[in-house]
Image (cartoon, rainbow, N blue to C red; front, top):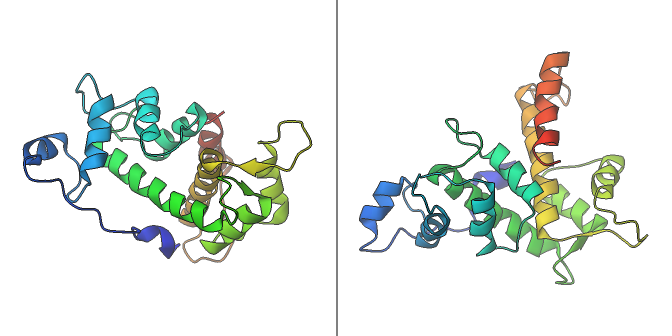
Amino acid sequence: MAYFNRIFKTQPSAPHGYGESYEHWGFPPGTHVDVIRSFQMVDRDRSGFIDGAELQQALSSAYQRFSLRTIRLLIFLFKNPNDPLRIGPQEFAALWSCLGQWRGIFERYDKDRSGKIDLFELRDALYGIGYAIPASILQLLISKYENGSGRRVELNFDSFVECGMILKGLTDKFKEKDPKHSGSATFSYDAFMSTVIPFLVSYD
């Protein structure tokens, strides 16, 4: 998945006069000032950590509003080792960069610029970044967004990120057990449950 190992563009460093705050808040070198400001604006208690509601508010300033379900999934995937329910500057910067990549993918495959993608566009987008998802699995995944109207299911950016991050997260966990890239892996029952259950409880 080399696609996810690069950034779409290099982000400029914080501007002159922002250095003291930049160093104090512990963001990675080169973090864009807008990312830092977005974090600072919602971290009102100046704890250096933000919870789900604060993350939702921070991201809504740059992206569309995310559901709390997706926010909880993002916190699970980018959790701080010292505080699993909140994220700090390092995690926030990584999450922001990741969402920028997903935004680029979404816009590339949203052919009609509707702000939504259908099942086939989702399939092509995932295949384009290296995920050849079986049709049955893809249909099962997208079915959770059906509203009972019988209309064609289309995903907005929020739902697209949720789908993509679930697939990426589970694939990464599988690859840890398949170091030779054979396409198969052996899990004990406990290891399997420990791998899958967090993805379910984090966003349900």
